[in-house]
Image (cartoon, rainbow, N blue to C red):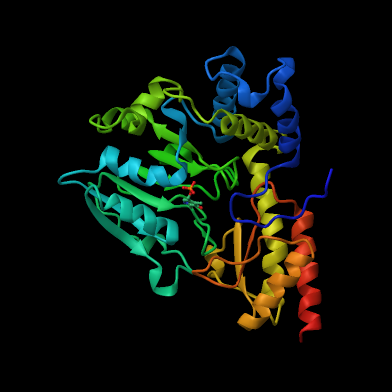
Length: 362
Ligand SMILES: *Cc1c(COP(=O)(O)O)cnc(C)c1O
């Protein structure tokens, strides 16, 4: 087998190696069935077991009660950007959003197609390098829902806890880039959704955890595929679901459970990120771009003293077997994505490389 690199890509991103290894054999013949996982009917007994187990392990991991549906939907997180306002916004209703980055902005843009949007707070004034504090967020009472992005993949900021919203307003979280990287208070949310390709599996698939009473109140005059109700009633099998993605997500859930669950993930992610942030704080060449109190444990954005050095650094790092470090074009510089599956030794390898780069280019 050819060697695998420490892949710092923001998404699609690194997956746990045991998951990839079991997928290799499942692709050829799944559980001694003589048929590969890609080739099994979504109505057959073997796949039914996969989807049931995946849902059960998801519930177990995050402590999801029976008040919630767990759905596996298509179209990534971006489809949720419009399915949400389509379902719960409309004439005479307002939805509130916290604008903390490129993805929040995109969610807001879609919501505006369906009704009034109130921006409860924004950190756009400083290129999203910080998060508004609880006191700075003005959630209006009586909103159809309140939406926030728990981890801002591009700017590298992350909410430490769950924002508090007015009584009766369902809180909706885009958790695409930090889902299951630490414990999550599901009960504080009306809905949590995530594109799979950062922490959970392949792109194109979205995990949606939504409270049953919200599914009930969602608008019904919509195409079947765009109704949570339809997917909930059919166990995410209204049409042919992304079977391979669901299988991989299930394997990722098993892997997280084997690692000790979400508490263990949090510890691991904290210690991994600390290796890089500690160095950024002492380096004379590199510095983190996010406000210290708002730093993401998943996407670590940093700059060097000049753009020339940054270009040289990215080029040399890539050549040294550290791909995926180029920052998003809206921020520039570098970004190291250290999702659940990213190994600690890869972060140490990066920091050693940065130290020697700094020494050589003093
Ligand atoms: C990647 C990402 C998205 C977009 O996900 P798609 O699956 O490509 O639609 C949305 N929100 C956040 C926070 C992301 O990181």
